[in-house]
Amino acid sequence: MTAPQHPTRTAGHTPIDTDGPRVPLYTEEFAADPHRAYRQMRDQYGSLVPVDLAPGVPGTLVVGYRTALRILNDPDHFPADSRIWQQDIPADCPVRPMLEWRPCAVRTAGVEHLRYRQATVAGLDKVDLFALHGTVERIAIPLINSFCEAGTAELIEQYAYPLTFDVVNALLGCPREIGQRAAQAIHSILDGEHADQANAELAQAMFDLIRLKRAEPADDITTRLLQHPAGLDDMEMIHQLLTFYGAGIEHQQNLIINTLRIMLTDDRFAGDLIGGSLSTRDALDEALFIDPPMHNFCVSFPRQPILIENIWLPANQPVVISMAACNNDPAITADNQTVNRSHLSWSVGVHACPARSVAYLVVQDAIDQLLDALAEIRLAIPAEELTWRPGPFHRALASLPVVFPKSPPLHIA
Figure 1 (cartoon, rainbow, N blue to C red):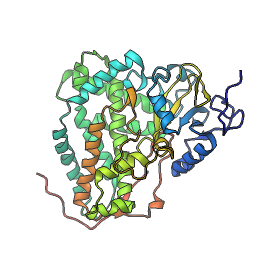
Figure 2: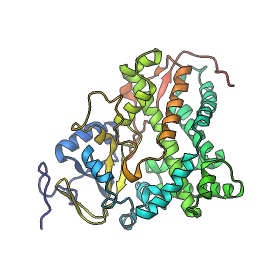
Figure 3: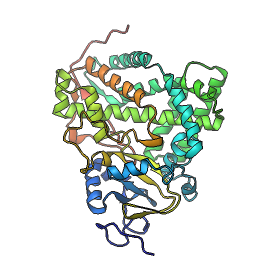
Figure 4: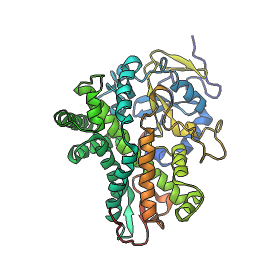
């Protein structure tokens, strides 16, 4: 029987047809202006778009908000387990480390997923948010002092990355040397550079942290995971921890930078640096709507061909939610998003981000610390000259150079 066709597509151009034309998500052209690409995709294909995540690695990108909600809230038909898919994917495929099966909540389904998620949530629930404010301040002030007298800075390398790196290490109770190895490996995985080698290096760093915490338990997330009734073994622990590192460093770094970019380029927010009406939290939510740190993720792998939106999706092929495209779907976009937090950037359903409160606090505090110290900060180059790192999943600037009046160091209490 012939699969039904989307009314805007020509025959043979549905996601189930792996020989048809596909939109590549890994190019520099896509990274430079993904929102234009999403509009073109929606015009041509509707809510479900045939894409390539890497050369020769097909998937379906969901760009419709309501379609995404349907999929995210149906884990029985759209499970996150990728074991069948990866059987035909070579180890050196640049997107495999992001999508391959791991014994952790993000890449499992059913009872297995519940076990891992309960351990993760328990580890996060005991994070002292009040103390975390102090941790961010303690880390932020020396970083700001390292460049405030220069009058110029590159905010990824000199601020957002080292801040999120140190905050995650503090939450996990991880020594800096182990954390540095983990962060470098995650960066390589996201950029698709020697991904298989980076994956192995990341696992080794996590194993070294686990051995340390078994010998020296403390009041940190790693110890709480080890002591949870789920009884996680070393391999399971490795994969819970790498999830924290991936989201805690790279994603929070990019959310800080993407929010600052908006605040430094959008007149509604730029005025707030010297007393305007819109807050850091408003800018943060704007970034989560427009340029979340993960534009495309929340990946599932249907176990059998499934009909949705009158389109057949293939079995065991990635279905990727474009949070950025869905957030800006004309069918649901409101006139004023700054007070609307209905975006999908934290996901929804059983895989919704359990660290949302922690992430909001860290990102908002990091931005407020910087702008309180350097209120007259501005971009060092025209906004259109900023460049984005290519990749099918993340939304990440290559750099964010700024200038400001030279300022004396802040007092450290």
